[in-house]
Image (tube, rainbow, N blue to C red; front, side, top):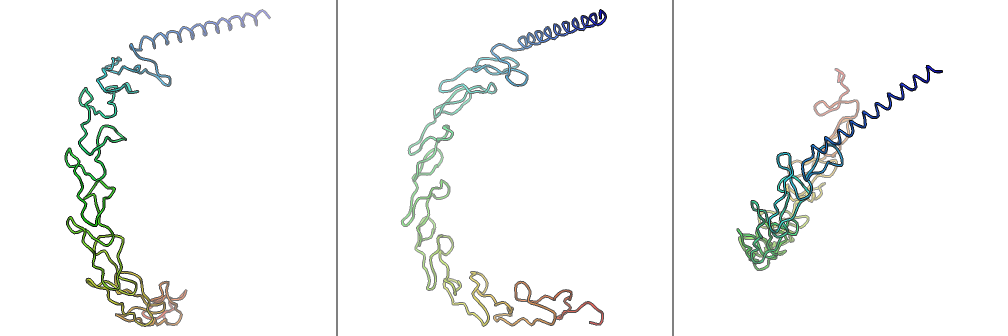
Length: 265
């Protein structure tokens, strides 16, 4: 029993010693951290290291006061200059210069450090020049290009809107590009006119603006300007498109026939 008590006493003393050593180590670490912190700095809440207090910025391992120019405000970053210009001003070296607005312009609501032209004006150098909209034209919402486009029924020619000459059997499109018109169904564009599509027997209108404007019905193939019936040999069937044929399984195509692959075929 005495031996056991002696052992417990030794173990207890060891615990007291370890606790005391840990306490001293923690205290020393805290003291070291305080010593490592430069003036006007605070230890980071998460992780290691420190950061400068608001109004100070890092410089060669220390925190120096931010020199705030007129029309500027402190940022939340301790890196860089530590300040930014107010709305309506832009940074120029160590100062904030007021943005000079030309007539018919306004400050950008997003950045506040540049200007944009009012509707009906375009930027030309450092000015906003009025957009000259021709007759039968209207302003667009784009700041690029001419800033205007022609009304329906007119197309752009140089700096003017010229009426589109729509031929017989044609209709206006929703764009002023190219000719500004398309042919009605059953007609196709040839030059400045719409010519009727000559539809052969066993054909139908394709609805496409290119080609001859028609396609052969299923079971027929196009041969020049006619639709010729597809000749399906024995043990074959029309293909997916319907304008040719494929062999039934397990036959294979050989010349214009379907064979089983035997040498005697």
